[in-house]
Image (cartoon, rainbow, N blue to C red; front, side):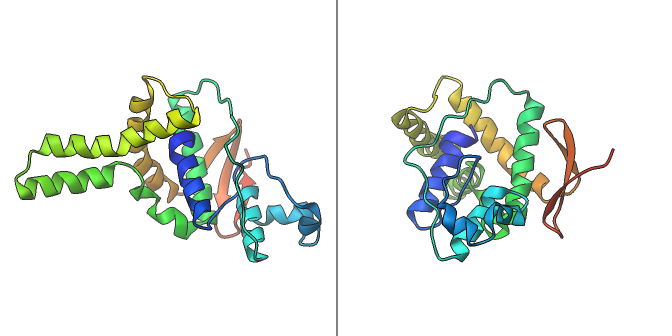
Amino acid sequence: MFLNTQQARWQYAGEAIGFGSAQGKSMLWFKPLLDDNGGIEALAAEIAEDAAATKLVNRLGYKVHLVSSPFDQPLGRRTCHDVWSRQARWARLRRVTFPLFFAPEVLLGAAPPLLFAVTAAVLAGVNVPVAAAAVIAAIYLPELALGLSKGWRVSLLSLPAILVHDIMLPLVWIRSWGSGAFVWRGNAMTIDTKACELEEVTQ
């Protein structure tokens, strides 16, 4: 619900207008280019290596290009706490590495257009449930159609999952502006935004 029809579509839309960004553990590099510009150590310039890769490529005047279709990433079962922790951690990394792009992320879900539609319907004297249903259909039907067309997993649980995502999105965004430690694969970590380093919390 976070990676497929939400994050993937925005990443491919960004690349289409010249704002491609690296993401994930599988990145194909032209090795001489990387070696001439700091080598693999250059990827430690940011708290996330994919953010460092994106900035390095852009700084050199090149563009990041995505593969034609995302790779499968089997995640297995996750608890609600696992999902929350993962998204909160990623949101904080995005906030620190790309603050100008991250700031408007809170507007990506269904809540803002739904709020505007309901307000407009009330002011115009239009049937509010009908207006809300129209907005929800306009947002979620294309998203589900995108998943089906790309062969991504779509089931009867997809719509409820996307609804949960859109409820979580502003909460995760708000949480990302805070500080404090988080647990990453059993290790307590904290983000030092001043030094832009990921440090292990001493226990």
